[in-house]
Length: 147
Length: 413
Image (cartoon, each protein chain N blue to C red):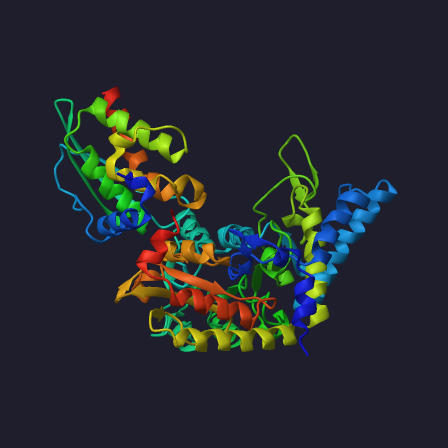
């Protein structure tokens, strides 16, 4: 079986699906959630991200915002991938995602649908879009560790 | 006769590519390409007359100083003012900050009013917000008409005895409308206020005559008219320049100072040019102005009008487009592309265009207050200059026809 990353039509369908029907795309008014507001310095992308951490597990991930197809799909895919993972698993996924973006070796199995952005590192002006929500998640987890 | 092929040969960037495709540069509202003569003028300073200005103790320094002062004469001739009314800045933003701070801080008090519009660029809004914070004056917005234009009538309605400064764009960087500055200036003066004009988007395209306009201050940037970056001009009526505090203090702008804290500043324009300026940029700007004058501003305006009319009429034929300013006065067209009725995010479309060599900007174009008026968060902006061609517009149209969510996503693979 060909891997997902070699199938541009399927990759396109996944991105379109996540852009048109983004998952976990509603914020919640709950003080137990950690929040971060992410702005892109180079374009309009403006995403708010919420994460609920409970007993070392990422129990919920939510986001809302105005963003391009790449940024929206990246946030949606991330939210599905991370939800329910332990913090250490999430950190491993994040690390692999950024390796992939940097065109370095990464574990394809771990990233699942997120491999649709495997080539984004060659589109340097879109890297910000594909990493905005991921950087936000990393920042929230780093802050959590310091508590 | 507008010799477009000959003109295009003057711009080395037009030989270049974008993502491997021949460059089609339609982001001239952001910055413009430079003709050979500008690049040569910048080089000439570095290769032949490098030395600082203001201190002609040796012959070379005299040459640099003379070239710099000649540039002031060229600008004065270009906008029809006295050379002592020409202050070199780092650009439009610097000029507006200088006026807001330097004139405003001395001449405004609590409850005075500053009038602007929602169509202004950030650089003609934020300095006034700060002035309001510093003085207790208030910033008020003159309403735009239903098309998004600044009208003389609406300016008159907004004026009252508390208004001290009115600061307006002459050509909106999003909507490309030209305001009737001459009539507005008359109304503003009758109300006892001064008029500041942001002409960043119009000086490069239309003949500018400050005497005719009778505005009090006028600012523009060099890089939007074929000149180097980091140089601009602040024109001010001399009696107003005399009443203005410099924003920057330092070398080159003072006669003397002492340990008791006494300072004696030079007169305008030197008073506003502290520190070593971008000498090569000023000399490049001079070359750019002379280049435009050689072609003729009237010819440039006419050619651009024809090109703009062509672009608008071709774009209107598309069935997947929303144009937010279907009747622009200058070559700025703001639009979005739809796919099955849904508006595509501008950045996705701009990235798709880039794949075909087309350079257009998407976003809010630094006019964040305008978007409520337009009913969208952002647009894609096509902004023209006199080296653009109908053939380039045709290419834009051809590519826009094929822009869909699918095709915009495919370019990332």
